[in-house]
Image (cartoon, rainbow, N blue to C red; front, side, top):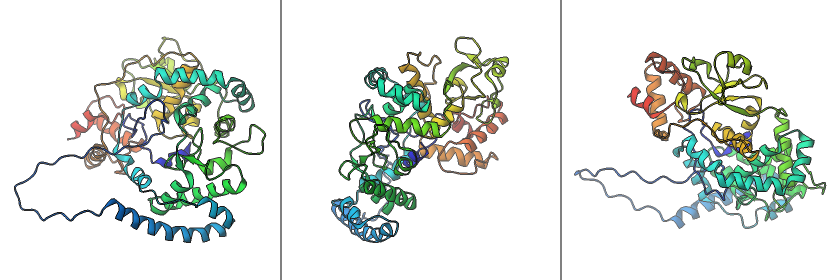
Length: 435
């Protein structure tokens, strides 16, 4: 969901998204790990002695002191917004500044995985098998949820699988502790303070307790990792017990809330998220962009058909997506792709959810090959590409290391100038050509 983008994801519009894959037993929420340091050859020049770094204890103590002052000031602001003092006392009992949360927030843009590496884990045989078991286990309630909200139960299960490995990894961070740390020490303090107020209102309503309110380091909670603002807007009490409980071992409210979220954002029952397609020789790759919408029958007239060679059914207006350029799999994507994208803005995530749902239904694996000889660009390489494109007259507008529509369009224009297929794929080959 959009609220889940608080983790600072790099969009995977061209297969260069930032992902740190975790074991199949855990969440596939895109999170990061520190990269190994780069060794620099030593020079035979005199250097000034390095200052001895402060110990971790000293740094954490300094952070804790500032955090404690911030909490005292925040409590005044929270009370002014209607949070009772007793709720604040209970919520902040034992809460401390967590430097690991800040470290993870700052480091995200440095880490990359290709879309195919991500999908290998996100839609692994184990995750598919576990998804089928989860669908069977919760089949009765999922059928009722599907009937109520008109959202395919397999899509709901797929989101559950990627967000918390079907409930087995819901996160162990204190939501209050994580959000307070981020509100105090992150680059998006206003956003996280609003989410912290939202979390406190959840506690004040009695839907859960501070001890049970746990989730990711970024403040996302429960089986399907809702942020507090999304919880307030769209979580539902499907069990009828008077609480919207997305944290307990019973996933009912969380699964129904996910369906309610997708319905709210325009889910169209019976429409696929996307269909894998074949691109014909001589295809105009400038047509492969999110703004160019055609009915599948019109795409078929241009030679864009399903991998079975047959025209895709006219489920609605669709665009063509090439997440790894002309040499990778191609998809015809529909409105429901955009709806899943509201849950998480990375294309790789949306494709993973849709494809995992298809596989849980019994569908086939992606048929086309990926350019597995390629590697993802590092953050430094992505920013270098943006600078070089702009310097050559193909303005990316921003130099932020995110391969979004502006950079993709700049790559297309550069490719056109060199007589390449203008697929917008920001690959290492493009960077080498720019160099």
